[in-house]
Image (cartoon, rainbow, N blue to C red; front, side, top):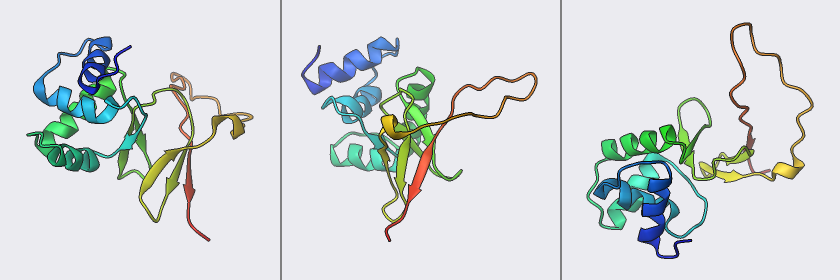
Length: 138
C-alpha cells in the first residue's frame, strides 16, 4: 500500500482506470494523499488546491469531481438541494450536517436503524438511501 501522498493519489486514480493528468493528480492528492477520508465541496477543494499551489480553475475542479464520482471514487452527498459535498468514503453510511458551520461529517452507522423504506414505484428500483441528519446547536 502506498504511503507517499503522490503515490497514494496515483494508485487511487488507477483503481478506477482514470488517466493521471496533472490536475487530477493534484486534486487526488488533496483528497486521499494522507489516507484519511474527507468531505469537501468544490469550492473548498478549489481553495485547498490554490493554497497548495496547484494551477486549476473552479470549472476544472467541478469537472474532476464529477469524473471521480462517475468512476466510483467519490460519493456525492446533497444536503439541501443546492449544496453538494463529495465524500471519499464511498461505503453506505449516514452523515451529520452541521448547519451553523456548513460542515458534513460521518455519523455512526451502527447507531442508525432503518426498519423499512417505501417500495420503489413500478419500473424503478432503489439505487441507494441517503441519510443526512441536520444538526443545530441548542
